[in-house]
Image (cartoon, rainbow, N blue to C red; front, side, top):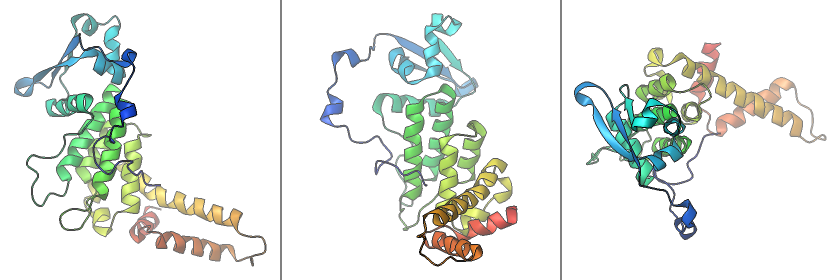
Length: 263
């Protein structure tokens, strides 16, 4: 099943009054701060973030409370990370929104830039072990890929997004699952053949397996749920009917062809 966003926007759901009014014990302390230096060379930037806020969200920064050099100095160096991505992370930390669109937004904007920024943010959140941010980015990526743009078309994640995610996440990553779902249920022939040779091998393997698993599960469901009084049909006929039903439901023929070629 495709991961569907629970909110029609790429930001957090609307806050209710019940969510807004909290007990005093749940108020975060903004007294202490941690200094985070991100990047290297001329691109390096330093940020000050309230430690109670970032420690509550990130297992990586929570280690600052331990017996570490960074814990004593309250200064963390992230030379391999992108300052812009960290700035996007801090923005989300304080506002619960995702500032990933270009400003100003072009007239013929199709969402490529925001998907790249979302992918970078997801990989960073994976690194610092912030589950809430990863969940928000997954929802935003799903929405961005289903949103009808100025020309009435939808645009899925490109090779750059896929490569970033597969290079920076674990095999069981929810974002990997989302990318496979998007290409399985929404992709057209152009999506599937563009830059195929440069696509991560794990992505192509999972993309090939997904339709076969879907078909087998639905065939199995058909076999075990059909009424006993129904005239028994040959297994090959049942399989054909199941495949036809899946195709009517929107499964792309190109995926089936890809599966056959892969095998």
